Image 1 (cartoon, rainbow, N blue to C red):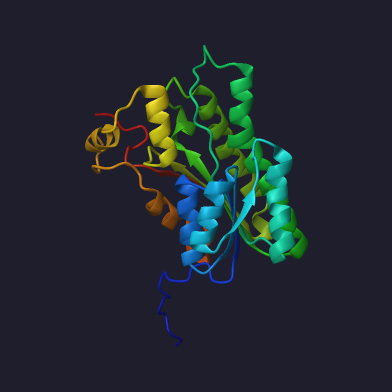
Image 2: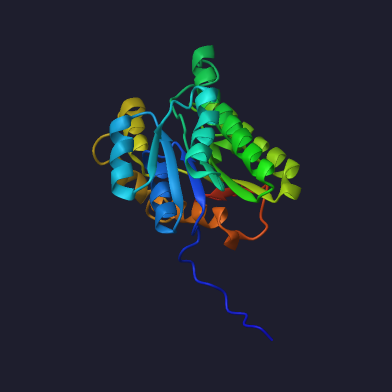
Length: 262
């Protein structure tokens, strides 16, 4: 009998071409670092050249400046990666807009902004990536960064919740459509996470002081908010062959249990 020893978790993405949209900061930047560490050739997008170029210098990844509110630029991020690397094996849609709005005070403009970043950009980036994979008759993996707000969310995140719920449905639809192409598509619905963007949001919209993170962490079951590097490791696993055949899954990555009550 042959050996049944399983490989370790090092080098999970050796030789893979990975594109991380929304990868210049926060969870996206953590995914860029993790993918590079695991052996991938990584490209990532962001709007701010200064932030993107610094991350590129730190990691060796390629920075593509893009405004994902424009669906053409979301699609072209894949095209540019294919032009530079010859293909795209893995796509991560990590960009997110979390500006506040309730059902009663959300304007059509704010609603459209959320749909553009949180739903339309992933849709057209996925379209371009799957087109490349199908044309090459090659397998591939896609991970979308969703939110537990897809299940409902707080009142002040109405358009965000609507867009993330749409992303969950899109994930299942696309995964089903392309399962026989061996293209696996999954979404990670993350909970409250400690990022630079969350810090700015708490200060801008909720009057948070310098100790807001410590106070928030103390109220959580695990004593901390979600950590970008932990999320990144999970995403790398889903992108890799070690996650097996899983596709069409919308995974809740959080420390609170949906539907459970005290």
